[in-house]
Image (cartoon, rainbow, N blue to C red; front, side, top):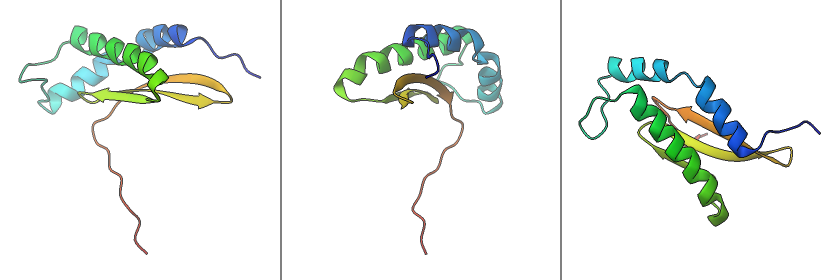
Length: 99
């Protein structure tokens, strides 16, 4: 079985490697604001941390993901171990396939 870092280690790695600058560029290009305010890198990082903290706390209630402002933090079970993921979504669609 492959080694999977603890959720806190995964969170630290995500915060180190996530491209917050790229997210900020996309948000500015789309004139995307939070509560009418222009977003900063610090806002993005603070929100990402809050979501990752929340999903870890809420998983005891059966929650596997939390989201706000384009971000989603989720915990999935991969090979019997928890894997933390942070995503920023610009667009998403799901729908029913009709035949």
